[in-house]
Image 1 (tube, one colour):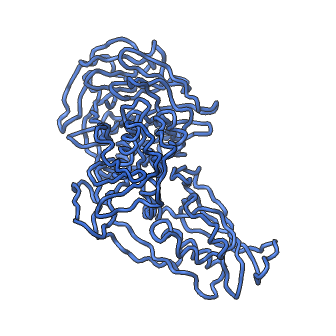
Image 2 (cartoon, rainbow, N blue to C red):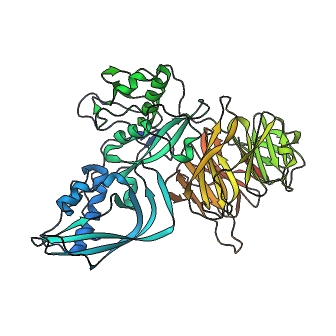
Image 3 (spheres, rainbow, N blue to C red):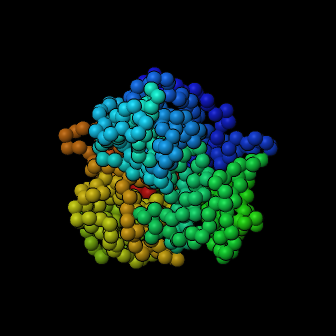
Length: 576
């Protein structure tokens, strides 16, 4: 943008803290106007936010400058001022009808502003009319619920704004709803919020990622808790039963360091169980998965703040081990010193490996999956001797596999195997690999070809025993990156994935992202990476990769740190 943009760096004085590494979370508290100061555990300090301070239109500004000034003002509208300045660039009628919160277009680079003639007659009272077209390189979009969708190969999009001139002043008279935000501003004005859903089994909470405006994110978050899950997750979670409940007032204020949620009388009609679960979901959603803050929930004047006191579901991530198959031995990487925990000879050509304290599986070079007991010994063949192309670990010792043709999945648990159809996969798509989220209700899928080519995410449907019984009927594309060969949920929100090694010797590409959300380049160690896993190593959550020389390296924290060798001469790498 040009020098017209004026930013005042109003860095937040308070250090907002969050508990999960790599999430875009922050404290559930706003800056209180009264009451005592509350301190949270110092786990990670949030990056200081930068607030924009846009200026209104100058006298006699040209049409291009009016539209450019409007672009300068939109980030502040999302972040803090509710579009007060942005509306100064609109006519009074356009200001009344335009809804900035309806959607968002996220672009990279610098917009190009150009005017062209308007073939329509200028409205009565206008001296003249023209159109300013803005070319932007779009990387993604947000819908009205804050769900992010990537755009293929940074599409160039032309956005048109009609302007009229009255009393010598140009103003925008016609435009589409929604905002247009640069990638540089995205993290500053939108906040990642996990809307916690209840898994179909009733045994887990599932983070449903949304991107909501910093200006009123709590209000929007409660509305999303009361609303429906997105189509890709709908079958894998329980209906909230809260469609008769809404916010009684159009805000969720913070008073004396307590978040106050006032709901309509519909909450009174819910069963005690449904009411308690609703309050619990609100509590964890507004607390970024934490419950250690003051929340007051009322419905038609009745205080339900303690309605969830008996609900034990939480958003904690389970401890997951990382194992290697090394020289015929199963080796745990749970500490700085690799520890042999079992013998598994005869698998020198293994292509895939999963293991836990209860056993695991090995994918042989011929595509057959062999079962391993807790000591690494053979316990038969999985999936009825079917050939598969990749395997991964699931919840509670599950082994997942992708069929050889990439059109179906297999799941093994407790000596039982099932074959899953992929209801949303079109004829042109082939699944190459999958990975199960930490809570076990979401599945990341790498796809070659078809309408969802890249990386997609879908829901895992489980019964009351936590057994897998199917997949959601829909999927959401989270990346357009092609030829993805491996992927891993680093934690509950962040997915890391890498492409296969190019035949021409070029560098592999890898990315990480909160899913669904914008991606960030992930630095890999030198060499060709053939496998990837995530889990606890030396008490820290770490990403581990295996290269084609048989060396396992790991990295933690921001994932941009130094890679350290965890094991060498490894055949295959897997996680619990």
